[in-house]
Length: 134
Image (cartoon, rainbow, N blue to C red; front, side, top):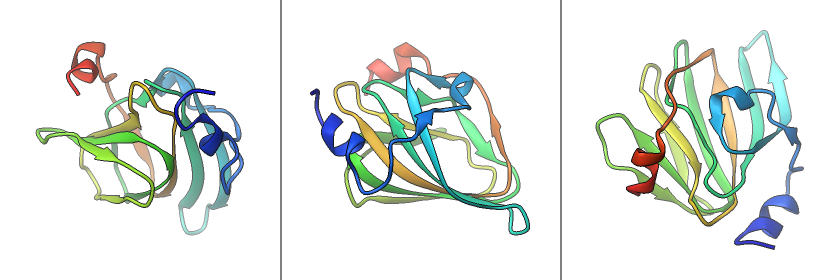
């Protein structure tokens, strides 16, 4: 198995199915929906990424998102700022309207819990050129 693959696939939360939002990702990701409440407009999902996989730039238009890293190594970047390398135990809070992306490093599987309140709007992809600079 490749770097952190076992930790992601056999973690505390299930790997899940191929991500139904895959059109907003470069590479293969998986989603296990852990909780969802329409009344509160909040969801909790275990999102897992194969090496090199990342989501498009996006914003949370009505709420926020909290990421809790549970396995592997990844990246988080807000527009106009340097990317942050993420490891197990890291927590990131993204406020309403902040353009950002997150995903795996090029050589590691990556998994995080995503606690999302409100809607999200996906934008352009993170280009291979941008990603390779990390």
